[in-house]
Amino acid sequence: MTEVFARPSPALAAGAIAAELERLCGTVFGPLLVLAESVAAALPAGRAPVLADLGVVRPAAVAELRRDDGLVAGCGLVADPGLIADAPWHLAWWTAGADREVAPLRVVSDPACDGFRDYTVLEWWAVPRRTGRRHVTGPYVDYLCTDAYTLTFTVPVRGADGSMAAVVGSDVYVARAERLLLPALRACGRPATVVNRAGRVVVSTLPEHVTGSLVRSVPAGWARHDGGDVPFSALVGG
Image (cartoon, rainbow, N blue to C red; front, side, top):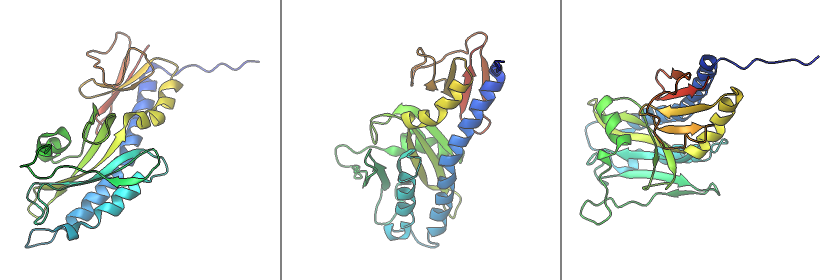
């Protein structure tokens, strides 16, 4: 006798994909929340911190870049301008290439020099500062670090006065996130797409939904599942 398995309904399939999205975000944000607490604890009371006070950052960043799942492509800390006495405009970020070799990101940190970029206007910095909450930026092409479609996860670090002293963050290539998400999308046996809150496509099994393209409205007959604290939605065809 041939056993027949029914496909899950679009709503159930969208919920299953949303659960995978929550898992993905959790596995990236978890270490960043720990690092944010470690950095906050390392900030001295009564004086401006110096670079030597932030020795906790590099080991944590390297650990993320050497994860067994290879998910994280960049990691580090970006300080509020003027926070660190001996390093204004401090961006301490490390990357790992295909060979898993870790290297510091070289950036121009002097506002008077060509090539300087004010990172405080960028979404991954500005949103946590405005909201006081963790944030995912993207998918976007990260010309500063990766030159590839990227998701940047950032968590604010609070100073003693409660203001944001820095962000800690991780870059995840969309192609690497896709490896984790595609099995759940394919398992539903229907066309399925993951979008961010702006409707920008992260990953899809539908050829028309290319990464970075915009889905302006949910197609007729499709189910949508919005993740609560996860800034992504799962769309599944009927």
